[in-house]
Length: 591
Image (cartoon, rainbow, N blue to C red; front, side):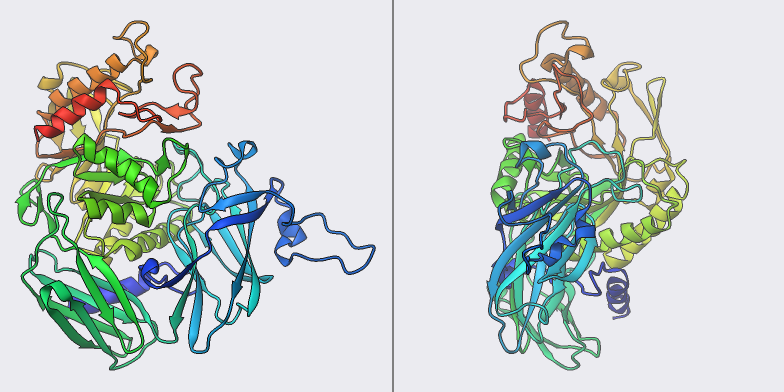
């Protein structure tokens, strides 16, 4: 059991905390009360709300009193949702918005109450009834605060300060190629529990096994010798265990399990019971490995037919957050012929991950360690570690998640980049060794029709992930079918994680062999050449076009062809299929 002691110690050591509290996982299976809906807001472009202490919501007591702020009578925003797409004056806004929600509550004896946030972008400060509850940094992972001793009987006022200003030492930093959607972008709820409850659990196959589950259940307090039961009714399984002095009960069993795969997305109802709590989850079991230069799913080779996806509803031009949004994106990926979605470049919402798993799409989870990160700033490694553990904490029971991606397009010459990302990789393996780990690199050299793939981070990755835009940012230097490869780690699987080019749907005016006209024909020709290139790649385990839908990006400033959109989508923002869509779909049919 030594490995489990270390795994749990690592989880406790590295897990992200909000005011010292780890987040209750699987929130929707709890006694969950939604606080979604209309929230009153104060837009604060000068940041003066902090000085005026707007969270106190002061009221006039004398005839001479007045206050230069009020939530009442002001704008209303929907939660969840970004503020940029809800009001035209906030389209490009980066700054502070104060949110307020009034809700009624009746405290119950023997019950505890927690505020749970799916995500807030980017900095959040939370106040309940004028008292600060806590703060959180990071726009793509959940956090919570206990309010048992703060919530009152009757009407309560919840105020959240949201600041989506870019941070020099933030994750991501100043520069990135997507719209900086700000606001309370994911679900908000109030969770009620008993005094003693199940706070966390890990129920997955043992590394390398097809029939042995190795896991644990954690109670919220260090309750020694408490009985815990794991039930899987379909397997006629009811396994009992006892907690140790830390409140953790270890779980190990062998069963005749029907394995999850894209062609058979089998999920089992798993019931976890303690003396005072019951949690239900739908969990699948699969084994993902690399062997002799191939990716192996359930001991069989699999080719990763992937597509890059941003967390954006293309039709509304807004941050995606709901099951409905997830189905729009995932259905398009399935129609393309995919068996994996790369959720770029940050952890997407929990609905996205769970719905992908249900319909048979493997998931690539990624940290927002994107391009120009200041690794030498002392707080950046701490933030990376926190976001890593928050991501793994939420998704560790999702069998559909097969890859942890820890960085995208970082540069070897950046001070401390190698040291910090190697350290992060080792911490990731200590927490979860059952999934594949990768770093996405675009610093390979392309000369004389030869790729020299050399980055030292590949030593620590399970798969070599390459972003290459030959035919768009870089001209071809010879016939695609005659491309040569030099790999510094030739025994590892190679995954083409980004490729493609831009095209405006319907644009076939002007020369179709010139990039400057953004024609569908030019983009289609890039895809034809790329498919020829794929045939030359040693140990090719999968490909992933950039990307599914055109998406909003302020750096794309061509007024005719881009209009604030990255046009590399296989689909337009209206869902129109470009010529490259059909080329990629046909390629996937043949794989």
